[in-house]
Image (cartoon, rainbow, N blue to C red; front, side, top):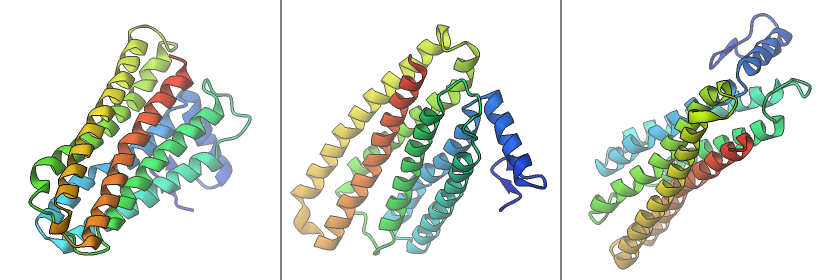
Length: 240
């Protein structure tokens, strides 16, 4: 086992490591989840340069960035597994243990989707078709914006905990969750526009490319879909 995994340090033995985890949860039940979310964010934020490389036909860079996303997703998995394995069932938490693990699972799903996108882009040398130029950048940015807003919700939870889940901070989190829902709707609208573009000109690309791009679109969309579920799950957990 590694001596240091994303801020969780082992100092000699597993019992001491578990004590560190307990202290981390004791200070804030969200701190380990925020560590994991940071790593998930690294996966997601590597997608724009990945598609820039596809547009530029720099396939060596595509492979490099895809590999980086896979490595980062693996690092996120290590954090996820450590949280699951070292969270004692009897540990006193201000938040239900099952709810924390469900939030962790949703975050893991976002990283998985980002890795799926990366893998799909390496299956063949994809061409960034001219009809994508206007709509695809909007499609990608709108879906990733949903993730970024959900990430802000996660970062606000410490402040919310300090106010006993009430007051101005609670209203701020409610507002962010509503913003996530609206942004996810906007992302869906742009997705439909993009699908119309490729279906109207499906004869302009080989079937394998047509199919592969559809799968990529679905996986990108799943990032915002799961992000929205995560935002609402956090709100439900806090009963806001």
